[in-house]
Length: 276
Image: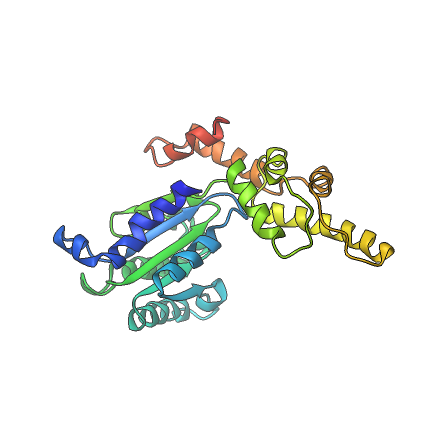
């Protein structure tokens, strides 16, 4: 997934790692990046990896941290979250399932839910131009088309990054990581990767878990650990199906083909047309 990592490196990591170079062009560290793609493709892992590479604080914001039944409390919770990030800069502020907090205001019936979106926009802009310097706002969603268009304005989440299902090389690398702490025979991860098209990381973990369960039964009967082998993973692959990629692609195709007058989803064209 080098293209995704390079996009995050340029948009998030380098401004903090080489501030003098960016300052020479009037660019400051900070801003927002929206990660989107099918469920289980690794958006949260990428956010944590970015924070770890920076040595920055990482604040994972869940819906329960923000939403409150009392009017006005959700907005105060959101403001407190941004204040926490500003006090601990450099900081990566990560909003998972951000479409629940930043939904289209035109789809909302209640005024207080629109106020939360307004507060979110105000916090992204900051009180002044330096308010969010050193605060990197990462957001992830499976449904970017439900996010209010105002969030895509420059200075907010104007840099969407598609996190696609892993390609064959990435699937082989994920399988290698998932199997590294287990008794292994000689493994051909590339062979397993070739038969797991459209599998995301979560699906591959389920595949390995199923293969391990079968191997455990054999090991218990034999009274000794029997190493996991390539045929074990291939057999498990025959019983596991991708969980959500096909459904996500079908939805994405509808938006790309019928609701893309602005060109916002052009990046998805090669994927929904079946090209790799």
